[in-house]
Structures are given as C-alpha cells and as structure tokens.
Length: 522
Image (cartoon, rainbow, N blue to C red; front, side):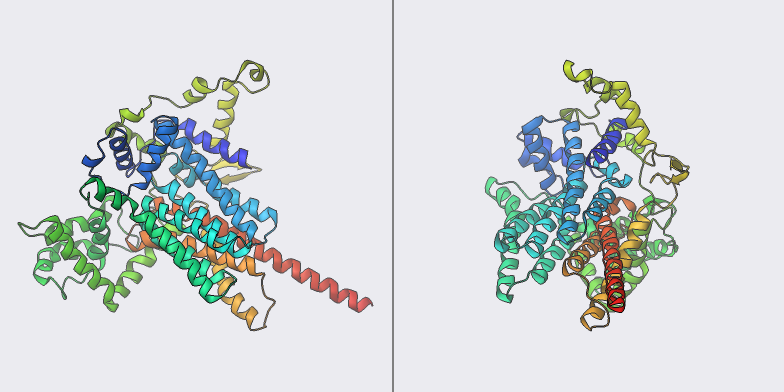
C-alpha cells in the first residue's frame, strides 16, 4: 500500500512537473531565498518563518531546487498517512482498519494535488499528526508521560511557527492528552504545562532571533484575518467607530445583499471585505491606526451575542458545509494543476530552478536511469511512464466526466463539478461523532455495552482534529475546498475508526450470541 501511494504521488509529480506554485506559495520561496542569500534582514514577507526554514534546511542538504521541495512534501504526506494509521492501531483497532486509515489519508486526490505545490499545507498536517502520534503513545501505550509531553510541545511549537492558524489543532491535542492520560490530576497538569511551555518557547524563537539581530517586524496577517469577520458580520449601524462605519456602510450593505444562499458565483467576490477596510480608513491613517480600528470592531463582533450568532448561523455553518461536503460550485473551486501555469508564468524563481522547463513525462525519461545490472530487471522508462499515466486515469486526472475505475465503477476526479470522496469521509465523521455522543454516555449509564477505551479515545481525537482543522478557515469565510486539505487525513482516520467501532459491536454481538447458544445447549 505504501508503494501504491508513492506511485500515485509520483504520477502527479510527473504529470505536472512545472505547476509547483499556488496562489499562496510564493512568499515562502521569497523568504527562503532571502535567508540563503544573506538578505534575511531586508525580507518583509508577511508569513510565518517555519516553512521557509524548512526549505532552507532542504536546500542545505540537497541543493536549492523546486523539485527537492516538492518531493519532500510528497514523502511527508505519505508519512502523515502512516502516523494516522499508527494512531488508529494504538487504539486497538485490527490492522485492516489501520490500513484503511492509511489508504484514505494517502490517496485522496486533493491531498496529492496540494502536496505537488509549495505551501504550508503538507508540513502542517505532518506536524499535527506527529504531535497526535506522541500524545496517543503516552495515553494509550504507556510511553513516559513527560518525555512524550516534551515531544508534543516541541512539535506543536514548530507547527505554530509554520502556520499560526493551527492553534485550534494544537489546543485539541493538548486538551485530549491531558484528559486521556491515565494518571493523577497534578501529574496531568504537569504534563500539560511542560508541553505548553516548550511549544511557546519554540514559537517565540523566531521573534527572539529577530530581536537579537535587529530585524524589524515584518508585520503579520492579523488585519487580513479580521477583515472577513468584520466585513461579513460586523454591526455597521451601532457600536464603536460609528463615524468610520458610516463611510463604509453603503458598500457593506450592497455586498451583503448580493450574498445568496450559495455564496457568490464569482470566487473573487469573497475578497470584498478588503474594500470595506479601505472605506474605514481616513486620510493620514497609518496601517497601525487602521488595524486598531478593525481590531475594535472585530472584538465587538465576537463579544456581541446577536452579532456573533448571526455570523455563526449565516456564515460559519454554511462555510463548514461547503468545505466538508463540496456543497456547491463555489466550494468546489479548487484549481486543477494546469491552472497553476498562471502562477508559474507570473512568479518565476530562478534561484530554485522554477519553472524547470520540464514537460509531462520528461522527468521519467531524464532521471530514470537504473544501473546496468538492474536495468535488465526493472521496467524501462517508457513502461514506467505508461504505468504512471494509467494511475492518473483512475480518478485523479482533471476531467469533466466520471472516470472508469474498474468493474463498471466510475469515480469523480476531484476537479470536476461533482462532489468528491470527501463527502463520504465527512459523513462517516459525523456518524462517528453521533455514535460517541450517544454511545459513550449510554455505556456509562449501563444501557449498552461500553466500547473499548482506546477506540473511543482515538475516535474522539480524530473527530476533533478534523473539525478544528476546518473550523478556523470556515469561521473566516474561507470554506473553499483548498482548506479541506487540513481535514482530510483526520476525516480518513475518523472513517476508519467508525468502521472499527462497528466491527467491534458486531464481534461482541456474535460472541454473546455464541455464549447464549452454548448455555442453551448445555
């Protein structure tokens, strides 16, 4: 199964060798190049430093090339699936369900698509799954609690340096570890405190380094993050900064009125809150002044029950539905790999050999050259290319039609206008959440047989990680399916855990039926 996953990832790499830049990937390459050139102090890109440091380490070890970065991401993605499978196995699930979790997490087309582009997605998911792996080992396999806690803290710190929006996943792992660890209350607090301390230390390290070397603050994306909540749900008729709100009220009301049940037909219209910010600004205002105003309105929105309720019911729940269920054509606007040609042509990075100039299939012919003794045993370059092309035809290549899989079964390609497999993953996750919410209290009350502790614990962890991964972008009106990448490995793990719980119930029922029959015959 690992070999199959690697072959499918390789098929993506070979089919689209020059589409390595997506809409948010360029700043990480700019940061990495500035560090490698010794121009780090002049860098002013508003991105966390973790991904750039990772690219720099790869450059030092293997050379600064775009192919090195992408290959590392594909390997890390398969590693993420292995970690999810290991956590499922830690729960006590049979090996088959661990294998199922690996397959669901490693072979989803949207996962492989974004592994093939530079960004924070792959490394973030790997670090989340690695931290969850250490936490599950301490809680379910009796690993030394403080050592595992230290590993969790260090990994979560690295995660936050790569993607500050991962705070939700980090909180889930820490709280799950503290509540699941089978030890005394004070020891649990000590484990939690150690993890939080180490995570904070790692997270603050870049700021300390910048202070020591005198690098000025490059700013952050706080203003952009708050802009969407303010624009979509802020009260422009009451509250703070009314004079400024008056300047933007007409524009905000116009754009809100254009919002239909399914969002906007044009994906670019989701960016309109930035226009609202410009109307809040007065002549002579600095960026800091505007950020202060927007922060005040943002806090007002979150702390006013009626306004927050409107945001949750009108936007957050809808965006979660879009993200997890591919609910409409707006939510399914994941650009297919050919669409990234625009970014490759617009943003070139010669320092990293991007664009490479490779065409589809050329990577195999140029680099697949086995040693002479092996060349007689291994397939030729043409045969390898043919096999990779066949893999791409099994539901992964962009198409407007369903693709024949096998035995008369046809599947969606993830790039057409149909809902993809994430619908089934999300449905299974919600079913698991209901099973846990109903079954665990009923088991404790004695109405039904209790489920094994490990299955309940890991099932809860997978559900919470999946929902937390989707919740933050959905809350900020980013319910488009690019952000489903962060949830898919844990949706796959939840699906495997649901199957394992059902299997455990069936096995227990058959065991009781056999015992009853045995007693009756006796």
